[in-house]
Image (cartoon, rainbow, N blue to C red; front, side, top):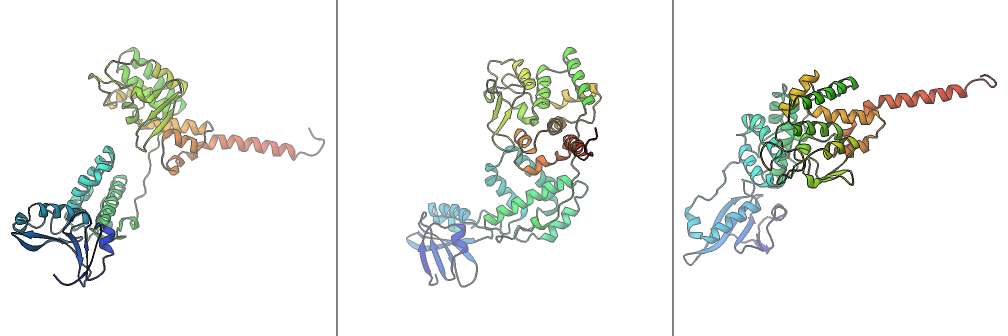
Length: 391
């Protein structure tokens, strides 16, 4: 080994990035494991140990190609456990050139445990449909803005999905930077222009709500759908909650005395839902089944209702509302709240929006209160401008 200055501390990404030329840093937690930078810019991971009574230096690999401090430490542990086998075995369990597909596999295996299941499902879907066919075989270290822009342009037929796939890819590249697979600050995705998305905002009118109410009563009378499905739809209407929040609602989350639902987890984390009289009436009518913790019970013992789409299609057909989705009930709750004079920040709290701009989409629905205020103000000013003595 060439002469080099050395010190001892836990080998981390920061330590490796700041390692001076001709230096060695020994890991403070794992004896024999070190990182070395020679006169150039490359850092290598090595293990110093004894094999058959003689000192051996066993190379693990170069940093970022595709080793990181953590993956190199795991390899070092295996070498120190059986150095003789390590000398004859393949030196790396990782590919010589890490592709986008290789990085995604590690991303889902490690970082995926920190994400919500629905988020992971979405990421995996975007990766499978949009990223893998076009970019999966590309080296993660060499992925450029031009490459990504080219393929994003090819996804123009599905702008919303393409933008979501781009957001996932940005997340993957940021993770790759943190692992040392790409230089810090090299993620090109934030500089790529997204497609304009025409958000679908369908709100039920008063007349349409009347038709829906009639259909719900008829469906109940005719036993067209289950009582659980009817209760779920009514709760969606009266709370503005998300579909999954209602279908997975447990009685332990409901506090009827305080008129609240306390969700321990939702799309945006913990979330309180304030209950109005209509929602309380629906909950009060629901039976509490022994051995089943859910408010909206399913067909199997101890389970919740899983799919509300089929009963909803039957009810909306009866109401003549074939273009209305279940999520549009949430939009309708928001539209009526704003048109009734509710403030956007307060509405955002009830709906569980983490970003103010998400609630801002309903701002234009406040036209009627603004119009009423403007009319009242105009009348007051007109009265004040009348000549003295006039009626």
